[in-house]
Image (cartoon, rainbow, N blue to C red; front, side, top):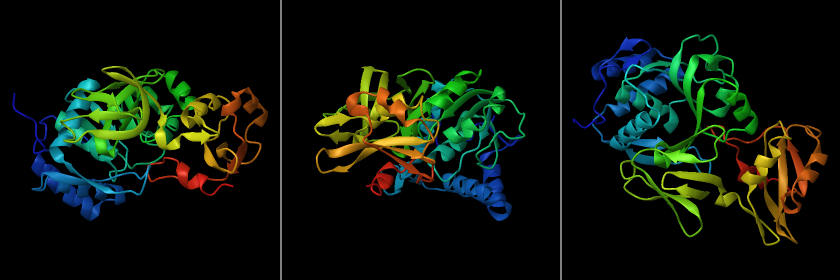
Length: 349
């Protein structure tokens, strides 16, 4: 079989209803850059970068765990990632897809790459918090961030499969999505892994890895990813996991979020799972300096005091009970909508 490379454009690929070849795409890109809105210009810029003579592309990280930075990535690795996604989600040439993510970050870029590599019939719309508003088209495959999914519950009746990534999904959103007929998957990945290397159906606990990937743990129980078709180096993450088998793992939390309070190690993400049923606002737990305990566990809630019944915290285990509750009008976020936990914790006393 002929190898699919970054120079290929599938003969069934369509953009906004039009069959386009590689040359057509380059012509369209110039039009988008010259006459399009801001989001259309960024699509045009990316496509011209993709179809230039270079074998690599520079990707911007989201800055969740540090300063945003550029990572040089081989285009062939992005093609391999697209093919793995196609296999995992059983996407076929001609499937109808919606592109509603910003092109600035890897998740948006990869939706475009998947579309012309796999031969999808893709519509693009401005990336907004209500991507399905006034749209009655039926879609086979859609990618969204949690906020978009939350605002699209009504419109998802026209969507067969959806992947949700970029930030953690709240339990409340998960419950709402489980009521619908759309097949919804939460994804696991980062810029370094060229979006997701694993996904899980909502309601399930374990992520399943995509084809051609191996997983293991290092001495600190963090996930190590071996994805030779995507990265020539092993990718060592800061994510604490429990490996179920060769193909599945459970995400427990980030090692850099762990709170060491009086010698007891507390996992914020696991405490947050327990709090999800009693707090409707956005929130997180974390550690701040304490002269006696070293670190003390605190709860930070977006909104005003009285947003939830604090007496319900008494139901938590002794060590999991926050020593203090802080209320903030607005959370600090990365460009992709993730909460800047560390930055916010540094401002608390």
